Image (tube, rainbow, N blue to C red; front, side, top):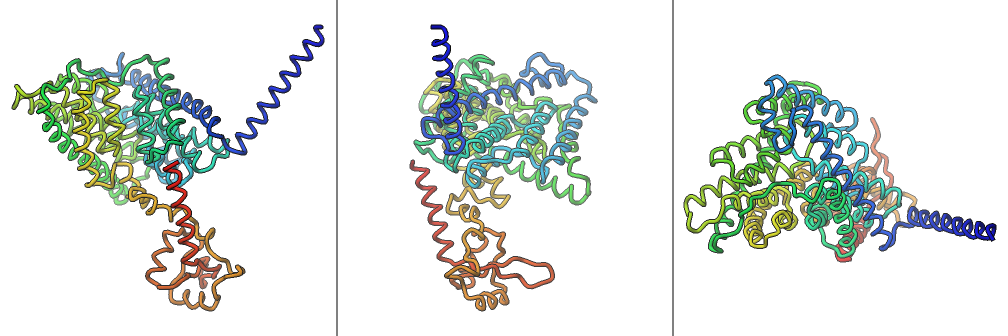
Length: 561
């Protein structure tokens, strides 16, 4: 009897192992089905939550050690009591570490963040750079822990995207599934960072995937909830910021004031974006003129931040303390205005110096401060028709963040999840709508899309603008031995006229030639040193249009799946 029982359990074990192996092989080589995708999304959500929590705890632990503080919200007070030499030295050393890491592990010395995740979703089947992404995570960790003035959510999003890229590679995922996995990772990272599962899912859909397809919605929600659960288990069920106890609107007639706040927030958001790009341009020009190595650029920025921190220590790190003070109404008008300007300068120096971190938290800080300043004026002018000035700080926080991120829906939902009050949500929604409408007309939709546009990646205009860049000419052209190849003599004649494209180029380079040359095809050449270009074949206009049409149809089908 015992022998039969052992044989039975042995057979059960053998069958289970074989089934598991077949399932894993099918998942690896065939890609996940819808049901399996939910399981993978759950795993990615848990991993994304652990990444967000680990990144946060690590930064706060190192900050607490370096700046001798017991609580992260009192960091600026602890820094103010330190020796001036220490306050300046910490960001310089941090900047040097950042510069050396980025110089060694990235080709351009640039930190990867949310803009690169958006580019990966649009142009690279949901994949991001892995080695550069890990180096960027280290750089951002050091920046935030050692005096930089930026946010941690951007690095968390990209680090989670690195994890989803690895998973997509293991699973041999196609482009649609790869993008869904990327959205899952982003949602988990954001939701775990802020304890906002609804807004985390919406952020992934609205900002990264840039569509709300039903197919992507379910797994992204699963991952977002999983990330939040992980955060709550480890850190507790607490929101990121301490909110005021009284935020209700006094009268609905007060809503026009929030419309004005939204317009002001749009201008503030635009100023924050433009100051960052201005600082980057100045930093690059100084580096070119003075000729110092690129790994010293973050250290120089760290020195500037250290000097600023001597007078305004609240610029250090994410800025939880000063945001909490603004939301609690513990600042007077001129303090709020001054701190807003100084924070914008500090963020611009951090980004211009090619240090790490993201823009999410800085936009919340600047929004809370500028919103409080507006609220103090509004409630002083119309005391009988106004609620609390802290409500304006809360609305300003959402409005500036929405304007900078280009995420009005998810940002408004974040504030609602913070408060749980629909009446407050009305005020925030009005301010967010106005700020986003204004800023999106002053920049290319958002900070992230403007970043990409400055790099020549025109994602803001939609798939019709960037899809051509995803096709290599070599994959669409007709070679010389093709049954319907172009006449070689005609190709040579066009080459002599300077009408040709390089075989290593993409369709976005070739398409304008069809308009200017008025030809049905253009020669495709391989460039050679000290010799005539070697004709490899020809790119026909009809073939290019056919490829573009198929890609555009696939994007439309995915967005409506």
